[in-house]
Length: 197
Image 1 (cartoon, rainbow, N blue to C red):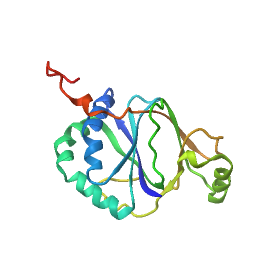
Image 2: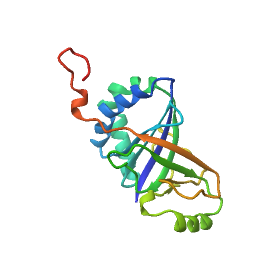
Image 3: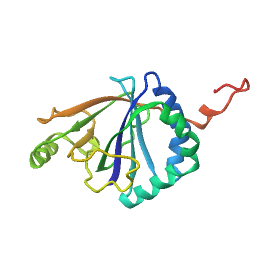
């Protein structure tokens, strides 16, 4: 199991595609270069100003080192102002332990459920009946956030899974998500007229 960040960004109206283009062109490879596993990136189908994504690390020590490397490195320094200009809130982050998640190529929609069970044993029984290995179940990681420059939500105990399942008997947030198609290098090659291909 990895340390996983489940990140939900509230963006300025109309700015989502600007952030996605920048993210795919610069931030995926920029994070991978410092040892971050960038998972699924999604448009929220019910909120045109929300971008949801996951990234994973082998453990908390790797997370701290990788985040320090990325956020003090050249890719973030060059593009942070453009990225930050698209965002209203980037602090809706859950720190989890789980397998991470990247959708299969060609997937048009996934359902993510954020559940706040009041009874851990009851949730385990629910999960045993309704959630299988394909649901990519994640649980809150209660370790202290040792990279405070990037806040995470604390004081919550959540379970997140991907995929349809019987409704859980606890408060849930269901997200209908459209995967962002991974960019190809050719997507960012200027054409002869000088505009983006």
